[in-house]
Amino acid sequence: MNDLRELYQEVIFDHYSKPRNYHALDCANHTAKGHNPLCGDQVTVYLKVAGDVIEDLSFEGTGCAISTASASLMTEALKGRKIAEVEHLFHDFHKMVTESEDEHHPDLGKLEALAGVREFPARIKCATLAWHTLQAALKDRKQPISTE
Ligand code: ZN
Image (cartoon, rainbow, N blue to C red; front, side, top):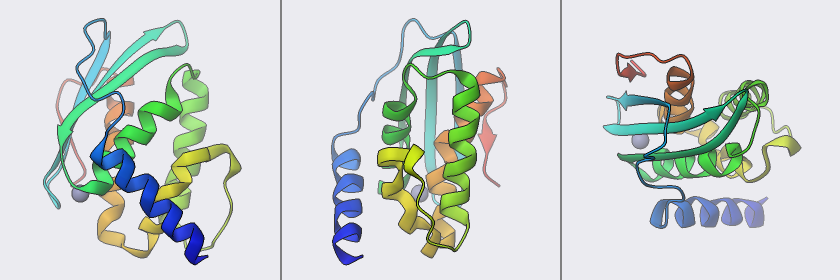
């Protein structure tokens, strides 16, 4: 378990220090802003949706290691996915970071690096902020979302 924990920390640090898809998306047809006042994390998610597929997505923002790594991992995991798959993945991801049992979620791939967040309840909102913001973008919500 310790090896796994170290690997998870490496993945989080890697995505925090070199966030993937970290830019505005000129061709985006959905965007939303999210804010986690508890920690001060801010994120903007950009999506280019064609039919029922997320063709491209990106993010910008400022925040802690967990919120930045989570947004970066999310953009990597969701590129090219169908919207129905996104809902399924968010359901599994949310379960992973909020429920106590040590269940394996093979569908989540690298997103499993954030499993350790469940031991730090205050950080769960950091880990889910990008996902809530993505859902707001898909629904074209104009008001910035807040985790509070
Ligand atoms: Zn945070």
